[in-house]
Each structure stands twice: as structure tokens, then as C-alpha cells.
Image 1: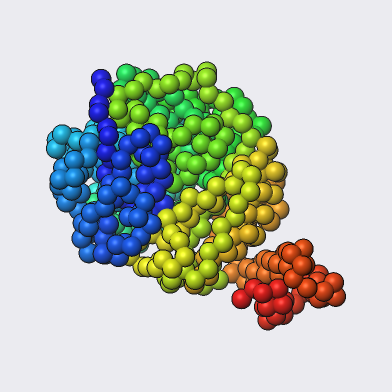
Image 2 (image 1 turned 90 degrees about the horizontal axis):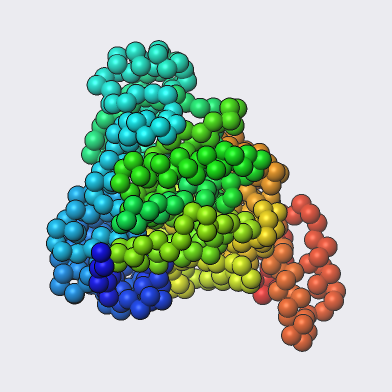
Length: 512
């Protein structure tokens, strides 16, 4: 089969929309942006070949209006729709409607999206395919009493999970029978409000787990490969914060790494998967064992780290597969080189419970240099509002090994400056310096166990001091007249100053 794709409508916004548009441009394919009223001046709108308004700012009135997006694609003559991630990316009804309209959906078939969209259905499919699954229910629970009976069979602690869930919503850890009723009611309510379906089920809760996922890619001819694993164990409230590949959890377990890759391919074939996706596993170091969690039927936020170590453009490959091209490689052709790490940079205040912190970007200095990549959807003067996910950018680095990658990420974070609102840059820098992160000795509870907001005060001061010294030295090198004595003053600031001292040091170097 060969499908003509000369114009792609990107049904998304921000950095992922720009990422897909760049892939289109390099393939000689025109791109079409859609935007809400809040995004009428957004970067993805400016970078597209064409752009169309689809509604007011709230996502439910714009980016989640599938029928309006399809109507726009038909009106502008697009051949295909790329959903990015989030919004309608994992909506089987939308994928089916796109195909029914005579358009190409750049993603998996609707049947695969639906079968993997229900965690209970997905568990049954994987169980039948011989993929390891966490002990637990194969269907939803009707009430709290059924949950108690199930938990008694599985053994505490257990995890209540929304059958249609994701991102930690509709999820509760239960340590004893006395907690079941409240946890069941809470998980059911949250699942219903978040996903429109209150069905929940139980599975065994693995203590001290690691989160390891495998990138898969399939074509229309039955060929499926994996592009190795990523580790996403550094999470906050079940939301990924740092991602890297190869996975530190599997550093000394090459046979298990291979086994996990084979299991991911088996999982993809079991649900008739085509295009890009990710099979997520829970890794239990005490076994060691790994268990199937879910399949994300889309391109993941963290896909750049895989691109950095494999040299394969996943967004371009998605489009080529949708055109009907076979995969250009076999499993034995693929290899990893070096190590890559990604930090998610969000408009959140880590010192205030990670609350979103909206505002207009006043200053923006992106890091640069060898093997540093910034995927972003904003520029100076842009407003970061409250309507959408607070992700501002993704900072990705590559190194010849994990030690080199961490050191490069530290340098890149030190160079990264955004003013106008709080960001998670200092928080990411704190993680890079933590000895347990450096040693690879962490699990999904790392942030909950190790992080305290006051820890960032000292980190902020270090960054300001480093920036002040760098600016002073640069001015001296340009012949700007900065005296050796002034530079020495900056260098010799006490290691435990008040924040105001750092701000004074910054002003000495021209930093505001």
C-alpha cells in the first residue's frame, strides 16, 4: 500500500506540534496548524504553512473538538492528521473518524487504541500473549466489597487503578482492608471525572519499583521492532520528570534488557500494532522481574532520548510508515550509542508544591553547544497561561556514557534562563546533583522520599553565583573593564550566603 501525504494537519499545540512540523518540512510535506483563541500568536501557529482557528481557549472547546479538526483538515486539503500526544492522540473514536473521512491517521489503528485504552482489556491480551503481567484483576470491580475480596486473594499492599486511566489519576495505594472503602470511592470518583468511566481494578503493589518502557515501531506489513528501552523512574505523583536511555535499572542485566525488548514486540503484535508506540513495564529489582503496565498508543513526550542514541527520527518515521513504507531496518540493524537524558521544563513553582505559575516570558536564554537539544514551543514575549499543560520545553542531552550525559545536563541547566514565572529548572538541577541519582540507586518514590522545597534555596544561589562569575569573566574577556578585584569578590563569596547576596553578585555582573 502507498498513501499520498503532501499536507499534514497537526492536531496539537506547543512543542510537539513544532516537532512534527519540522519532521514534515524535512520530508517536503506541508504542515497545517490549528489553534485556540489563547494560541492565536503561538509559535506552532507561526511555524506552520497554514493555520486555522478551531475555538475558544478551553481544550474542550478547541483541541478536543475532533469533528471540527477533521472538518478543518478536509477544508484545507490535508491528506493526514498527526495527533501528537495528549488531547485526542489516544482516542479510538477520533482515529476511526479520521479514517472514515478519507484521511490518514498518523498513528495506530483505532482497534489497537481501543484495546490498549482499557487497562483491564490490555492486561487480558498480554496475559494471553505470554507477556508478564502484575498479579491482579482481569476485569473491573463492581463495589468496595468485591475490592476487599480481591485484595485478600492478592495480598496487601495493593493498587487500585482506573481501568481507563493514566497519569496517576484514579489511583490509590491500599495497605490494609480498613482503607479499601475510602480508597475505592475516591478512585472511582476521580476516574469518572477524569476519563468519563469510573471502572477500577486491583493489582499487586510492588514496593520500590522502577519504571522502564520500550519504544516500538510497526509497519503495515506485520514488521515490528523495538528501539530499546527508556527509564522514567524519576516521577512526581506518577508524572515523569526525568527520562533516560539506556535504563540504569538494567545496566547489569543485559539478558533481561533483551527479554523486555522481545516482550514489547510480542505485546505490539498481540494487538495488531502499527506506527509508533511505547510498552511500559514495572521493573521489580528484588526479583528481578518485570511486568506489563500499559501501551501508550502514540509518540511519547520522551521520544527524543531514543532518537539521540539510535540516530532515528521517530516523527519522520511515523509519517513514512503512514504513507505505506515498510520499516527501513530490521531488529538486528538497530543499536544504541552513548547515553541520553531528558529534563521536562515546566512552568511550575517547585518551592510552592509545584503549583502552575503562569506569566509572560521576559527573558529566555536556551543552552547550546555539542549534543544539546531543546524542544520548545515558546519564545520571548509569549504568554504561558493556565489552560493547558505547564510543559514549556524539553531539554535533552547526549553523552558518551551516563556520567558524561549527567555532566552535560548540569552545564545545560546552568545556562538555561527563563524569567517571567517560576520553572522547574532548579529542581532538575537538584536531581542531577543528587548522589542517588548519580549512582542510579533510585525508584519511583525517589522525589517523594528525598525532595524538600527548601533544598532549592541553596541550589538557586549556586546557579546565580555561577552565572555572575561567568558573566564577569566574559565581560573582562571582551575588554569591558571588569577589574580582577571585582571578579575575585564574586569568586570568594561565602558558600552559605543569603539569597540577597547572590542577587547583589548577579547585579555586579549585569544579571537582573
